Amino acid sequence: MASSHYSRTYHRFPLRYPVIYGGAPFLGEGILNNLSLMGCSILSDRAVLCGSHVRVSVLLPNQNPTVSIELGTIKWVRSNEFGVEFISLPLEARKRLNNALRGELIKLLQGRSVRNEVPECSIG
Image (tube, rainbow, N blue to C red; front, side):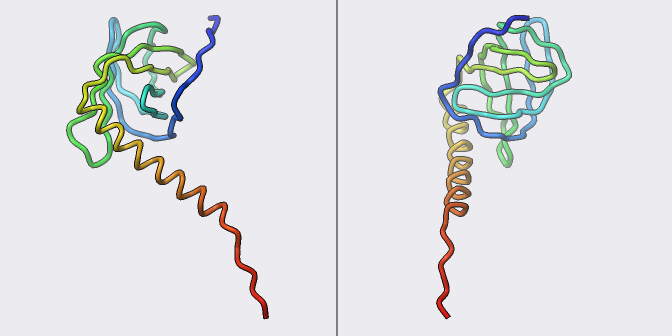
């Protein structure tokens, strides 16, 4: 299958959350592999069709109910992984997703800050 060029606007964070997804003619469970404000990739052993519309429910840690992406498009498929671009996301779901990603961004920046610290020299 020839792949078309696809570029991302937002940084994707490597996260692992359970998901349920469905579209015509498939329904499955998987593991979210990475997440951004506008898309994600999902690992699953179910076959999906590139270009299909899909609904995705993500179980974020310590949050109930799931975050529901009402409408997404499958942009690419590679083996047992596929990428979803979010098309329709209710406001409440977008707020919850923003909060989760804000926490991940803070962790990422704190990790970079710690790695970039220059150790002090001791004179003695």
